[in-house]
Image (cartoon, rainbow, N blue to C red):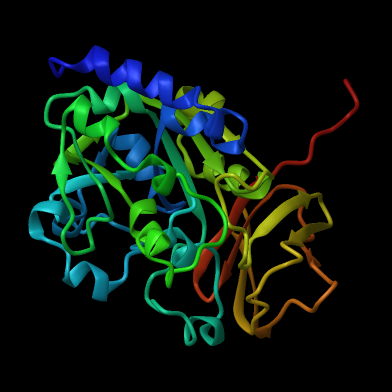
Length: 332
């Protein structure tokens, strides 16, 4: 641990008690560090017991879904690519551009069309424990920017521009005092090579449907180990919720009843793929021009099996996977 670990912990506690933080939704941010990734990457993280650096994952070809923009990554220093990267807060500008399933039409108008995290899962870590570790460092702005500073001490942590890092709401880049807010929101914490999950507090999913998907993707052992820390939330503190995702799914022996996000800005068209497996029987349902109409977010898929696994993809992005097993209510 760092020699000033107690000072780091004391400052984070004091920060969480400041009036401008504790009277808002940000009151719990100082106690946590935030890392998001697509749901398809999450099982590998939990089974390995580590978050790995991007460079390691690329070398091992074990990054199932990359949500980073190639253009941004090309300008990121190699030393940074060799680190695990976390944020001081959720809802960063990077997340804004990446979150949610976007149709090709929506992606074509995006500032970063290749930055895409269709189903984000948040890993929340104990900030005091991580920041107190030897080797842990942090920056004053995003590490894909120019002129960032990398620091590590309690005094430097205290001197970060926290009102800008934790800033919420609109701002005007034309005003000198607000021009750097976007880059401050991107301030990062970095750990060389890999980060174990000893300080992992929670795993947050955007909806109950996505939580069910994650749990289904885990082995029995991993589900037993992590299930109590896997939470779904309908609140807005972690996710933007501006693009398409599944809010809820109800499975029965006749159909899968799907409820999509009604306020999506990406209504399609999508290529929809549904796969239903029951024993050796496999059914495929495809629709090349699947769209969500305004005011209509519910959709039904006929299944026809008592016991089955169902998987849904939009433009080949996994958005749901789960199993239905018919339970006999009679005890005899």
